[in-house]
Length: 86
Image (cartoon, rainbow, N blue to C red; front, side, top):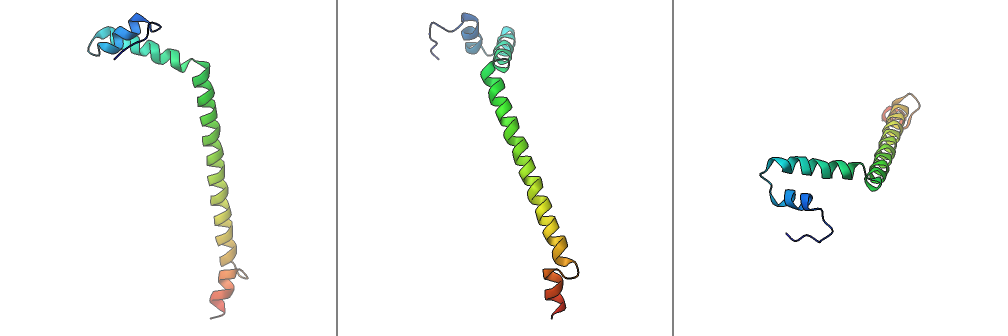
């Protein structure tokens, strides 16, 4: 694996030596730095908003379908009238 001169020697060393103890420390430091970055936080916030919106849409569909079925089987509903007419 080639690294550009801009890479930190510690990180490069940690990536090359996956069996060493300091590797976990270096990997953890890199992961922590990524998690604390503005880009990661922005992506995470956007993803959370999309998940929330999806959940609201799913709940709305669930409620609409349940209401439609309840209304259809009530006396005077579409299914009630169809079954009664037979």
